[in-house]
Image (cartoon, rainbow, N blue to C red; front, side):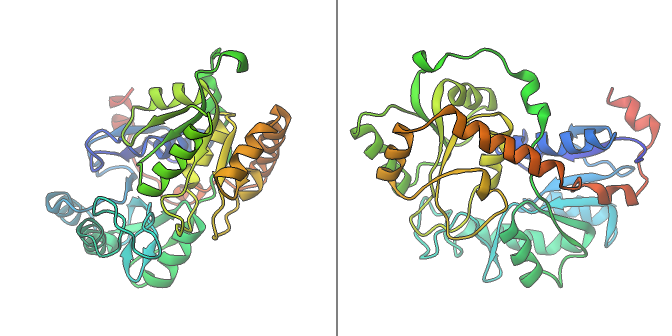
Length: 323
């Protein structure tokens, strides 16, 4: 067993981890299942394992890592959150490079800077954790010369998510028909307006909404809704559906061209009209059976963080300091 805590570092994401809270929860739950303590902090610790989410645009942060760690350092693990397209990060970008606020095309400055920052420090990390099949394959095919070990991370059902569950409005008094959270691209906006014009109430929570408000919105709506960024977007937002499934929340997901291991547990629709048809004929038994199927599948999957056991790090002093 690993001695001392595993440090989940979040300061490189808006200094408070907004946008990665689901990842943090999942990692802590997986470590808990292994009997390993974890801490969430804004400090890099040199005497224990640090799990860091990819975002290395800050040159000072890169310097800290380069000064304090060595190549293939077992104290460093990075979570890759973006797919590599043509050598550049671009998970959410449309295949036809549709532009939205300058972020979702491979040529935009943010993706170039994030890619260059990662390349500068990639050699330090002992392991790259990839929480999606497409991330894993793109890193393996395009960044294998930069990375030491690339590991696929299957997203398992975690019962710990339900420990906070309380009584929410019954179906008869739900506040909304659909709960949507995320960036509102032109395509998503068109879908949401179509639902509204068809008489459905959609509660929209834009990016960086607090986790408790997003959770309340989902529980106070009949369904969660996962709409693609663009018609040509080919990647499922796996963390979004993991969060819904682990919280036992029914979610409708627009179909994607890329196949994932979670597809078999989802209520997938083709277009807005198909979504309306499926929602009108929905039964609670449908989502409950899919969630049970997901739970059964998860039990047959090995803990994806097993590899951390190869490194014995941390001290009791550090562990006690965070209790």
